[in-house]
Length: 280
Ligand code: GUN
Image 1: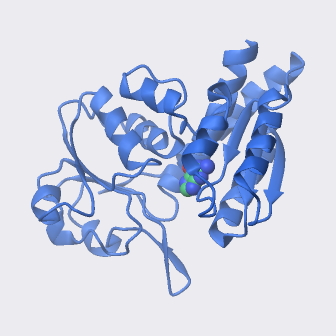
Image 2: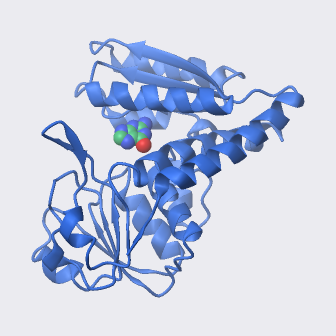
């Protein structure tokens, strides 16, 4: 069994990005990334702080807009428009989830798709669906990089994706499909999940439910990727019962230290891409 070490790969990618940022700065270009956080969701605050710190590490200039939970959709769109027009800002990230009274769809569509480093805009999702991506969603993109690093070829593999959300499940399925995998997407209405997961050469879970994936649901020698993040007794855990599942797989990601650090590395990568499509 091999651990897919996202932490180590993220360190490697960040050092490459740091060097590229240094070269850009010599040419007088400082990559800029703007974060918008609406409300006081504690997990979102932690994520935005981690992303801000990662920008500092590699020399990307970051701006933080913290807005109160009562912010109206109109006020938020005004801030986005201002950032769309600000030449110092190459990338814009609106941390999700948003408060209930704000339409996630209208907010994502308000972001200039050329600054959409999350890859959430319908233009970018559409490009991915057509197999010609511009910005790709950071979490699935990071998982594809992990596969590449460990020479895991997904072509022709049977992949089961558990979770069909816009941040991971859907874009992940499209990336795998584009790479030649046979993809089955499971979700809350899926009947007999175990019957599906047991057939998977590659099993990816992005649900947020501890111990959703148990040993009896996994094929011997499978590759397991855990995107879940939950808190149990003040410890961060994934969707996979790691202790038991890890005994029968060929590769597995740990939580923490697997997919999470890769998401942040790919955000920095996408920020560099946002500079390249405009300035280089
Ligand atoms: N909320 C959970 N994951 C993400 C992410 O990758 N990007 C944004 N903007 N919000 C999130």
